[in-house]
Image 1 (cartoon, one colour):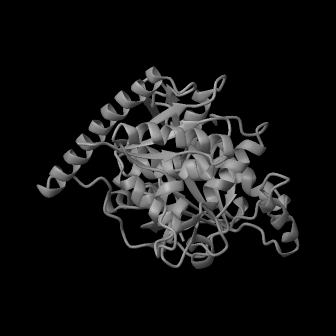
Image 2 (image 1 turned 180 degrees about the vertical axis):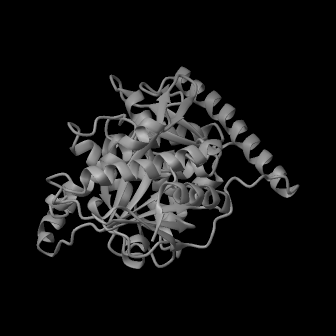
Length: 425
């Protein structure tokens, strides 16, 4: 079977010439190649995004051409995410010498992928690329066959827990009036479906690479999609929250060195002004908290969920970020960005942060699911400790904290911990 290939690259005169040369070599060897200059349908009723997504979904291998310009390409980043969701293997090809290819692979969260050179268009380089395409194409087909077989037999197991209906205030508890009189509420369901809360806490990894848009069971993926600008036809047009995260990391490198330590926080807005989170749910900010530390190895990634001592760090950093945001009257973006200019212009209309919602940390896939009782107790105790410490700070203005239980099992455990540690309102 002829392998199908999708070419992903940063457009530019020299890079486009290299891409065309590689496309010709691969087509000469009878590969089915999707290449934007030749495969896009002019005048088609299908949009640019749709044609690209369909092209990747039909391909066995996504080839990423690595040059120094590649790391700046939002399109390449998006195409890599689509390939992961479509279970297509990825083949990085180095087209520029003296390049830190590992840095680019880590940036795109494909450090596991082995790159091959295409520097001089020599026959040996072409043959190495061909062998890798054939090998990876078979791996893609094998993964897809296995998935479809399991699906058709009805043997696919549910990956995600069944969620409860979304409610902001199932039960409410009060804290000592000397601690600011803040109330703690038990919420249930999808944390992104809550209405009228200022800050949404997003559990994130230490590289601040949000979950793929296809991983719809994770909070990170939902925040990413629901904070984006979406066309009327439902296509993602601006990956707003991830772009703001990327700006924070790259333009505030002195403050946010990668990887970021467990419990630390990077703030963004809740996305595009017309997004679901901002326009429908009235969220204002997303505080991205490191709850998973990624250790990149030669062959695999080791994921370590947040430990108890860092849960207290996380709550403290969230409180500190609330104070900083209030003191800066909502200016959280790095200088010399469009978002920064917009926030400076809106300072006169700024309203202090009054509410924040936490999902349960470390209870997703690969997390500390069996320890949710311990996690819930630690999170509640951390909230109590930090409210006590921050209650006298003039810029600390919280009046409502929401702890969100996604499933019935989560609710039972969290509610029991709240009954033990808090006083019902």
